[in-house]
Image (cartoon, one colour):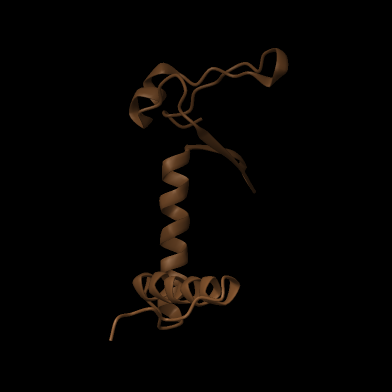
Length: 97
């Protein structure tokens, strides 16, 4: 077993206590949200914020492979939403001339 491996007992309703030192290292406090991800090796438990950042990094990488920046994608989304709103509510460009 690796040094950073700690054993815990599964209690009623599947409850497990995350060891105090690990909670401190991850900044987990009462009410913190964690994500459970099934992997080939078992279950990965990580703070939700970490998972979100990793997902955004993967999205940004995939976009860059297509030659698109995250900022470009966001801007095109704004333009598309603007067009959809104009169509849905029959709005015309009301910019003063």
